[in-house]
Structures are given as C-alpha cells and as structure tokens.
Length: 198
Image 1: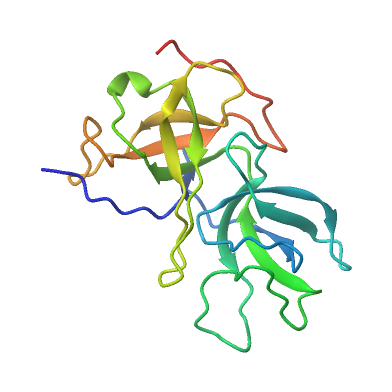
Image 2 (image 1 turned 135 degrees about the horizontal axis):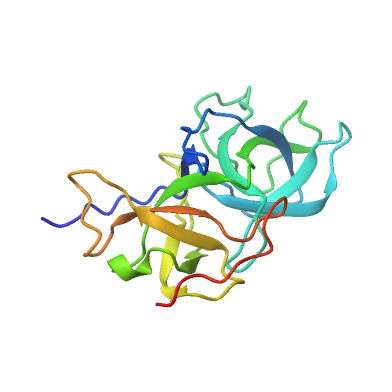
C-alpha cells in the first residue's frame, strides 16, 4: 500500500535520552521586516538581532543553514484568532513590530518528517538536508521535507536520519515515508559529525 503524502514539516516527538517530547519551547521574535511567511513545522535560524524585550529574532532557515529549532506555534493574532501561521511582513500590535513564535530549540530533539522521495533502510545513520517549500495557509502547516537526494555521510548536513516511523501506514521502502531525524548541526549544539557510509 502506498504511503499517503502528508507534508507538514518537522514535528517534535522525543529526545535523544529516550524521553517523549514534553512540549518545552522558547519564545522568539519574527520581525515585520521579514518578507517570508512562516508555518508550524518550519525549521528556523537566528537572524542576528532581537526585539525590545530581548527575544531573539528568527527567520525561516534555508537548506544548509545552521538551525536554532522548529516552530511549534505562534502568539495569537488578536485581530484574527483563526490565523494559524505567520503572514509575510506581519506586524501585530503588542508584539514589538513583528510576531512572536514558539520554538522547540533543544539540540537533542527528535522530529518526524516526510521524505521528499524514496529512501532506503541504509539511509539510517547517515545525514541529509531539507527541502524548503511554501506551507499551507489553510492548515498552517509547513511545506518542508527531508531531502533524501542529499543522503550522505557528510558532516555539514543538517539532519541525522535516526530511523523510520513505526506505524502500520508507513513503509520506509517507498516514496513519502516518514522518518525520525535529529539535528546534526545546531546553533546551540553540534557543529556536525560524519554519518555512516551510504
């Protein structure tokens, strides 16, 4: 049976020490000057500044960037409580000329993500990057996927492939499989280690 293609970016599910993800996040600021929309499940990086309250600024990460974490939610927009993503260049009153986001920024977080093609069991233990695509303005979910075409042992690749998601609806040997990944490169953690040979 084919895997269902259900792209929703990166979703925290656990930690390297074996504990489940406990929902711990930190508050960050997305400045109004950032013209890229942001979605739940997007990988983000530091932007090199902060708001007037001292919350570090973030923007959507591109492939190869050093990430600080993954977006799990946004501060509500009081003018549109149903808005479940951050609109490009958004400036919400009371959020310091931008919008606040909540990010799972622990270097040891494990995430579930869909691969953008067909992986193999031998991909486990190697490293890969991500594919950045626009998210859904309907669901608010990210369009990012794991870029299986970059699967290699290269130490500078951002994610470490740790295994396949074990569910009856997930076959890791065909397209659109869901994978478990961790950060191989992280702003507050690793500068990258070599993966296993592919």
